[in-house]
Amino acid sequence: MTTPIPSTVLETLKQRLGPGGWLDDPAECERYTRDWYGKIRGSTPLVVRPADVTGVQEVVRLCHEQGVALVPQGGHTGMVGGATPGADSGSVVLSLERLRSIRAVDPANFTLVAEAGVVLAEIQQTALDHDRYFPLSLGAEGSCTIGGNVSTNAGGMTTLRYGNTRDLLLGVEVVLPDGRLWEGLNLLRKNTAGYDLKHLFIGAEGTLGIVTACALKLFPRPRQRDTAFLAVPSPQAALDLLALARERSGDMVSRLELMARPVLELVLRQLADKRDPLEAVSPWYVLMELETSSTVIQLRPLLEAVLDDAMARGWVTDGVVAESLDQARALWSLREEIPQATAAEGGGVSNDISIPLSAIPSFIERTTPALEAAFPGCRVIPYGHIGDGNLHYNVLPPLDQPRAGFLARAEAVRDVIYEFTLAEGGSIAAEHGIGSAKRARLPQVRGALDLELMRGLKALLDPAGLLNPGKVL
Image 1 (cartoon, rainbow, N blue to C red):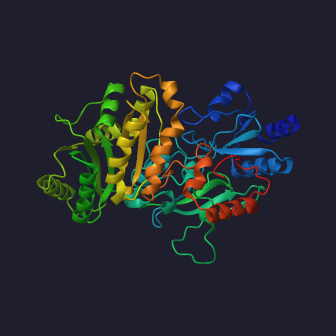
Image 2: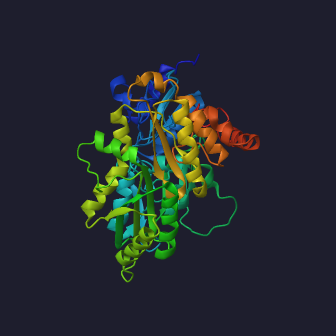
Image 3: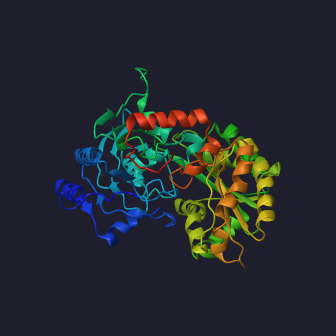
């Protein structure tokens, strides 16, 4: 049984943080104790909300001295319990939402330094205000924070061209588990002076240190962008289209999203403001976007040439190209609001897997029939970032079966999906992380030596195991 946190420690934290720096009312704390879907829930006697990095250090140092566990938290958009406290009330939640300063923007150096609590959409807009571009793009970009993005190595829709968060990061500032501050806000693109320690904290889900600020790479602002919603006969056709578009455009493809017809039907059924962009029904669809910062290259003729060629080869059977920003947004909303539509349908068994691009068609061809045979009547709704191999291979319960009974078999559903995923050399955690939900399955995808090295790093940096306990390892 977990020992309750001494009331003296809780009171000391409150006194040091002052008004606005903490919450202890259960009703106010509730949103800090669950994941985005509300499936994983915990409890905490106190949520601390320091206003600056010094405050974060003070909280961490005190909890380290008193043996109190801390759960770092960003924008409450996680889906695997990575920032959710346990159910035993044995942890204090450390929210970084008040660290909201953008410390510096250097357009000439193409860099931006932001504190952990800055919302991703604000960083995107700030870059645009300086005629620059920060390409990380997620469905939750209006609420997720950059500290959480770094701590989970978030991917999203532009990974195809720009990479994951790790690829967009120059440096990080981190409060270590004992309260010391590691000042790693490097702004250099070349620096071979010893180990590149920032990589320890990217994707570590707050188990090795608390990211309080980060130095980000910026890019030239796109001057042209074209979005196409396309009907394709198969996932293989979508991959053929991707290769063609990358080659013909000079690698200007920034996004390529795949969705099966049942996914589109789900969105149209649950979200009244959505419309099917095409008249004819197709088994699969692709959302593709090309972008360039050039004012010399004409993007639309390139896109049209790609589509003409793809249609001649039978890789595209129908499509529409957005003629305005509003039309592009409407098309992208069909993809971005799939999680909302899924939740409105009652939810299902969600999966975030990664497959080598060349193996995606065979994976889908084998996995869907296996699921339908094992769970008669289940509804497989695959979609995702096919350009980087990341699929959200979700499964909904049969329409005539109680939802609770199906969800009770969630791990059996995942057993089928993960078997085929691993057989193709894939991963069970593409962009959502391990958190607490997938911790028991980590040995399925990481070898004994991997786990030994991970535990060694954890023991070195956090020997008492007080930082985000029960996550990842």
